Length: 412
Image 1: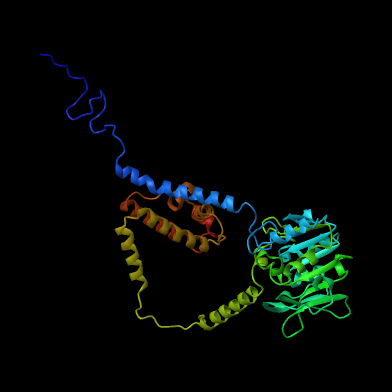
Image 2: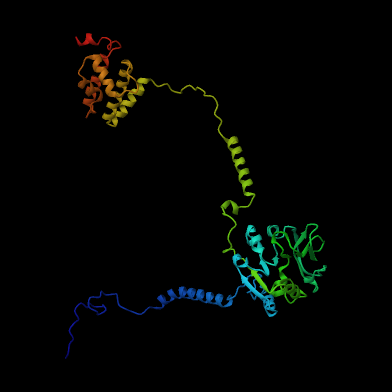
């Protein structure tokens, strides 16, 4: 019969491994532990898949009026047609790169650009196309053009003799513009009711030098979703195809330089200052209305008259109950020093030692003894406190109102 020797360090119910405590057996992960990590792994996988899809689908820009976007709001279709006709279209988001353009410069969302940089940006181009500009942009590039309301998008006849709009009806509406008198302009696609047009072409407009400025209030004629409608494609090609090069500027708010230092006050609406001023006035009036008004002092009789002796005895009892021997001695010495200083005509701001010197001179006593009584260490118990009180009383009795003048007689 063969028997096996027990393993050293093993215990009943243990793992059988030397030195390993029981209950810490190596076992595979159970279903509960795997379920615990399932949700974080699924979330991480979903984030990775979403990022990959965004990278693949959005490989090109999908912004509004972006020549690199193939969405309905983009403008890739019109740029492809221009390139087939031999026009080089360059898309950029940097205003500095568009400053060197000598052909046609297209400004999409020009209101994002600083107005003080627009004249220099458009000065070198032969033709400037502003897509749905605001009044600040018009003041910087085309001073004679004014923003005059908006209208619903609809197909309209050009109603003008401009060559760019001669292809026929196109999508109009959107922002409407008007011009000042005595200006060489072409006004096309009038709004319902009159007084505003969707397409304004200014020849040699003001701050843009000799460039022709085209103000396009309806950007749908450049978008992919409406390029095949009516004469939108012909209008877009005629407006943009005058030169061999087209620089399409799509400003990025994150990279556009600011025209000046931006503060918190610049970001607030203009009416915030008036609101704060009105609140300050209201708060001031409320404080005046609800504030306590202090009138003259009114003397009122005390309900109970307390004798001075009773107050003194009550305070002494409090000191005795607290065993405040040092505090009591300090109070007695301070009162005696004040009375002695007044009796000997010592200055109020004089040091206590000066009072002790005058007392010694006035009474003829030893200076060290007077100092010990007036400025010595505090007593240790009540008996020493009583002896100190007697000594202070004796010193104060020795100093009479005429003692300073009778110093020699007292010494004899």
